[in-house]
Amino acid sequence: MIERQIVAQKLKEYAIKEQIFAYLGRLSCSHIKMQRTPLGERITVYTSKPGLIVGKKGANIKNLTQLLKTKFKLENPEIEVGEIKNPELDASTIAKNIVNSIIRFGPKRFKAIAYNVLDNTLKAGAKGIEVVISGRGLPGERAKSWRFTAGYLKKSGDIAENYTDKAMESANLKSGTIGVKVSVLHPEVVLSDNIIIKENKEDITKIEEEKIIEEVKKERKKKTRKKVKKEDEKE
Image (cartoon, rainbow, N blue to C red):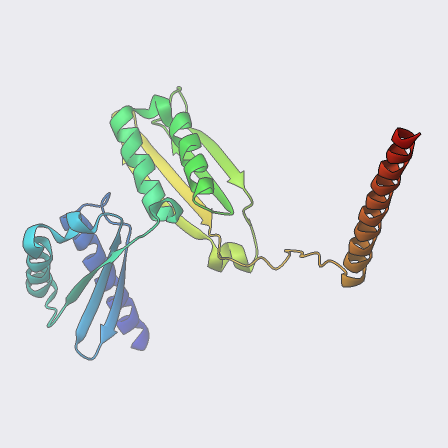
């Protein structure tokens, strides 16, 4: 009985998210988080373009709140907009931008689009990124799969499963459907196999002492040279 309730609740949450994506536009929203509170359901829509989601004087939020009340019988849904400060590190936003670029410029430029994304993500500070583009919509008679990687990215283990940001999107073209998978390793993730070499303080002091001794020797040599020059001039 409990299992059925959990499954029904998850299906309802999935239907609510799909309705929000359909109303606001899938390409404009990154991801949605839902949280049940004593006052009602709190729905947070994450996006890099909050002004586009809110609308003029909050019209989109008001209309969406009323739609969720009537269609899903939610008593007091609270819709919030969370801004993604660095969209170049968000896997969902990156995947949506790739899909939007492929739809806009065509599938023939998918390589240039992918390499541009890799460059921008690494410049933003990511440790690693992987982009996989596949499907019948790519140039060629058969379905192909292209993988683009840059930086350092874990493929297995706890970091790959729980700390790697992953997203999937698809683009429906006349030639076929293209799937896009993006995996990003954020800069704040601490790797377990990261080795930090500490410098020995004794070695540092010895090096500093040797530098001081060399400087003193150079000054003495300069002084002796000056004395020799003065004696030669007197003679």
